[in-house]
Image (tube, rainbow, N blue to C red; front, side, top):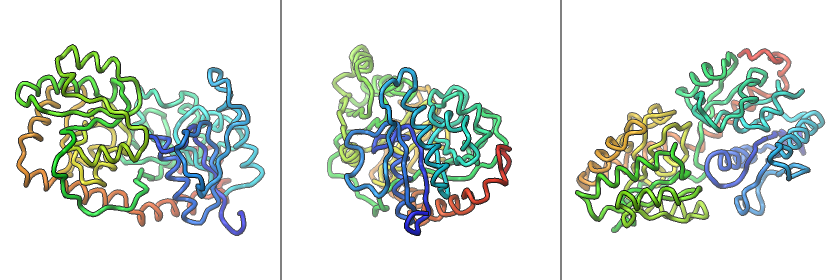
Length: 377
């Protein structure tokens, strides 16, 4: 307790406003602080310009911030977090993602105090999961999972038999009212993710090549981190370079402004956990095309805003993109309204606050002795 406030520790390898773990780390720290907790965030890397000047939580960086090749910053941060947890005895310790720093903590003396928030699809081929952390996951207090569809992956992939509690992602901003489409779209389709093969960017470029003969004026924008050179070359080789704009979107505000001016968001990923970009699109009343992976089917499968396709299938993507361009204004308006409704159902501030309170109250460290290193519910 600090000044009468419950003390909560959050540990992550990254913190900021970028995608994935950067953003959810910031979101959960802010949300816990808004509930009245004294929050200390241990983060290996903080995104430059990714945080406000007066955040309602403290940031602790590694004493040594060099030697990433040898994992020195993560190791040092884990030691700092362990010392702080032993000394301050916080009410809860939340670790964001099965990362290297998570693995170091799970191997140490505070393992039974950790609430580990799985951010991925929990499949065997996931490159974002540290093998050491996955192997030691049974030593945690419990696992927090964003969706029921990911629970099975946690059980099977990690051979985990302990407690799993639900904590889905959310968007920090308050829900917006239904938004009418702009008079003129800047693009027909927007890709907003890492520029990597496993996000389906090659399939999007291939589908655009199929589409171009029927819709010569189709406009595609590609935003997100990562190099664009190999995808520019592919677009040029397929004769669609003039139809695809590779955007520089340095801030979340830039990304949201671009998203608000597109007809459809497209996310043809090979695998996903609980993608924030779909929630962001829904908040702005933007319908989307997405693959049937991760929690997408569970979360949006019955929603008229989502046009779902199999992964790694450029032809299927082409057919759905064509259908989007041919739909009537009335059908498109129905999809926009469905997107906004689903956002309000999934990202309610009331439901997020309630869930966080339940997790902290029911999994506080006061009763940690009942679950010492057993991995039992």
